[in-house]
Length: 380
Image 1: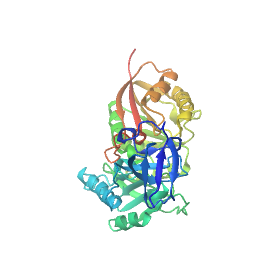
Image 2: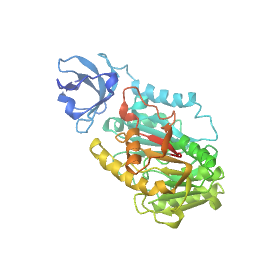
Image 3: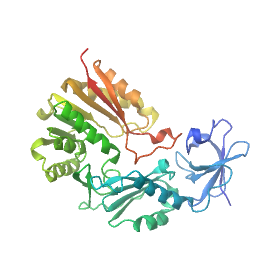
Image 4: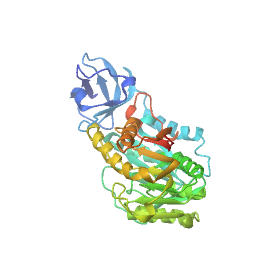
């Protein structure tokens, strides 16, 4: 029996342009047994079939559409999309670049596979199963990926996995060596969405004659890239374990003399003497601090408070990278936080996001979650 998801009369315009997510408030009724291993049929209030999707009836997003149209996708659609996503990375040249061995191979809705994320770290892979429907296809996913993975496969699912403190992921990024904790540590490992931005920040630090300050440095990506470019760089993070890896990464690239790390809260007083500045580049990369639209105003206020402490430490001509990893905090909110912090002499010179290994399907606005605004201090 096919499960049917019926929309309310006031659900709004539903189709490819509205994106693949169908929310609880849009659904009138669900008929039939919810089976995460099968596709559910989406119908409007007139019983017209709109598409087919993966169902999780108790979730905030009960249905994620994978195919628009009255007829269901052809059998084997999931496996074909898995293979197509891997092929797309090869076509982008990522699989053949020996200087960069870590990148995203499958990016959930961006590859037509909602709830599934796969990151590659050298010979290893990290798989994140984010929905019941994807977890139900675990065997098929592992069968395909294990046959193509010469190293280890780490799986992140809803159930808690036992932590192996000795397990690490090793990779290269633009010719530099890095390691990070293997799951179930921080998300899927090393924030690969910032990969190309880390190299650009290093180039900006060279133009500004350094030094660089990176708040929320995790395992030291921005810091190591800047130091490799010849700039003194300081990283700050609240996690002692992350800073242990950051120091290890600096040492492995023979950059200890140009790097320093401070354990502190990036939203705190920032009164450590190494943070006094002035700096040529400041990277402000907070964790996701707005999980919904209702948290947006609080997030902007918190960012403005911290940016108010940081702006006096940015030298004339220097660059500020303000980052948001929440869909609900957009570029205009980063602008608003700066203005609330008292900035009147910063002009936005770059509007960045993740690299091409993090595709976003047209219509899926929520898939565009990472924003990095780059501002330069100008004379006024």
